[in-house]
Picture (cartoon, helix red, strand yellow):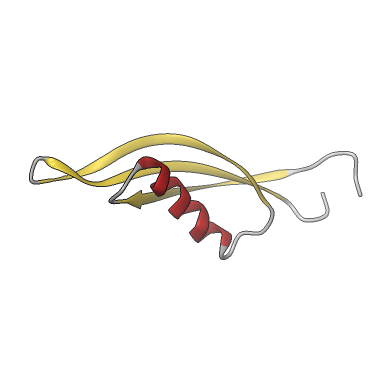
Length: 71
């Protein structure tokens, strides 16, 4: 065990027809399938897709930080 941690960041975009929160959760759930040791996220963008004058999808850009193993 070291006395410090080193992290790496990836950028992803999550989407949902329901809400911004659901878009975040969808992105994190997909990342968790292949990225180990995720520890934090930062919302960098919020946008949406418009269909017939209404929100069709919420889209949220995220930076996801994960700890490098053994750091």
